Image (cartoon, rainbow over all chains, first blue to last red; front, side, top):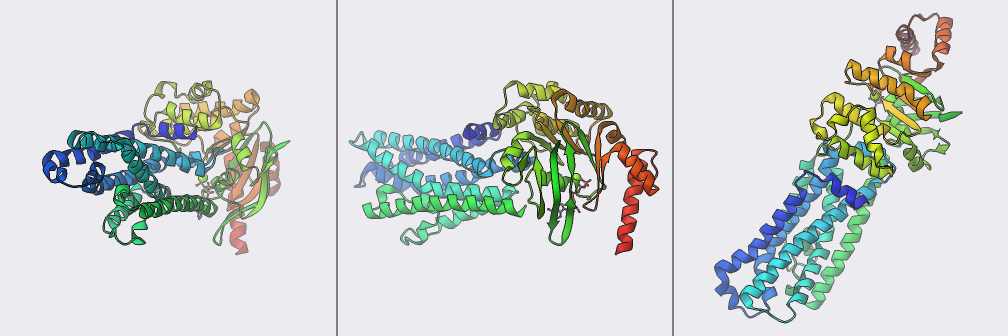
Length: 240
Length: 251
Ligand SMILES: Nc1ncnc2c1ncn2[C@@H]1O[C@H](COP(=O)(O)OP(=O)(O)OP(=O)(O)O)[C@@H](O)[C@H]1O
Ligand SMILES: [Mg+2]
C-alpha cells in the first residue's frame, strides 16, 4: 500500500523518465563501444560478459549511482517543496514507513535500470561474440551482484535526502560522494568498501572469495545504512 | 464530557517558555476558540496535540487517549490544519486528498465530499502549486475535514480567504458540531468571527492561559475586573493589556 502511495506521489516529477532515459543511455554505452572498437575486444581471450563489463561498467556504474542520488533527491524533494511532509506527520503512520516506501520505489527503479542494462549486455554479447552456453546465468549472477552492491548507496542517498530540507544540499553531497568513489583505487579492499564505490565492482572480474567478501560487505552495509536511517528519523523526531 | 483535556501542559525551547503550564478543557461537540496575540503559543499548543513537538512538561488526553502512548490513535481521530497549508505541489487538489484518504483508510467518496465542503470541486484537477493562496488554504482545510473526524484542530483556518470564503468556512465550522458531532478547536485573530462561532473561549498570552470559559463567563469576569464588555475585541484587548502591564510590573 505504502509503495503504491509513494509511486502516486511521484506523478509529474520526471522520476520515471529519468530512470528510463538513464537506463537507455547506460545501455547505449556498451553498444556504441562495440560498434566502434569491436576488433580490439573480439581479439581478447576472456568470456564475453567479462570483456563487456570490464570495458564499460565503470561508465555505466557512474550513471547508475548518479541516478540513485538524483532519484533519492526527487523522492524527498516532493515532500519538502510544499511542506507536504508536515501534513504527513499529522497522519497516523510513521515516518520510517515513508522512508522504506521510498526505498522500495528506488530499489524497483534500480531493478528496471539494471534490467535495461542487462538486456544491452546480453544483446552485445550475442551480436558480436555469438551465442554462448551459460550466458543467461553469467549475466544474472553479475546483475544480481550489482543490485546487492547498490543497496547501501540507495539507503544512504535516501537518508541524506530525508535530512536535507534543501534538495541541492543532498544532491551536492551525493555527487561529491560519487566522485570520491571513482577516485578510490580498486586494489585497496578496505577503501573500496565505501558505499558509493561498491557499485563499481563487477562480479566476473573478482575471484570467488573476493566476490563473496564484497557480497558480505554489501549486505552488512545495507543493514547498517537501514539502521542509521531509522536512528536519524528517531533523533530528528525528538528534537522537534 | 471533555474531549480534549490538558494538565499543566508546558513547552520550552531552551530557556524560552512558549507554553506555560496550561490546563485546557474542551467539551465534546462544541467549537472552542483559542485566542491570543502573535507568539502567544497557540500554534505550539496545537503542535503538541499532534505530537509534532514533544511537551517538556504536563500531559494531555484527547478522546480518552493519553499522549504519548496513544499518539497514533489520537492522529486517527484528529483532522488538523496547522499554520500554512502543506501539500504536494506536483499533484492536483484531488490527488492530494486521495493520498490522505488512502492513508486514513476512508471510503472513496470522502474525497469528493471534502472537495465539495471546501468549494474546491471545480478546481480539483488543477495542480496544487498553481492554486491561489485562498485555494491552497481550502485544500489544507479539505485535508483536515476529509472523513469528518470527531476532532478538528484548525490553526487560523480563514487566513487568506475572501469574505465569501470566510463566511462559508465560519458557517461550516459552526455547523460541524450539530451535523456530525465534531469538536472543533480553532484559533483565529478575527475576534468578530470568533464571537459568532465559538461556544467556549480560551485566551492565551505569553504562553499562559488568562481565561477559559463561555463568552458569557468572559463578559462577567471582564466586568468583575473592570474591563470593557462591549465586544469580544474590547474585552480581549483590555485583558491582554492588563496582563502585559502586570507582567511588566512583576519584572
Ligand atoms: N522551534 C522553535 N524554536 C524556538 N522557539 C519557537 C519555536 N517554535 C515556536 N517558538 C516560539 O514560541 C512562541 C509561540 O509561538 P507560536 O507559533 O505558538 O505562536 P502563535 O500563538 O501561534 O502566534 P501567531 O498568532 O503569530 O500564529 C513564539 O515566541 C515563537 O518564537
Ligand atoms: Mg500560530
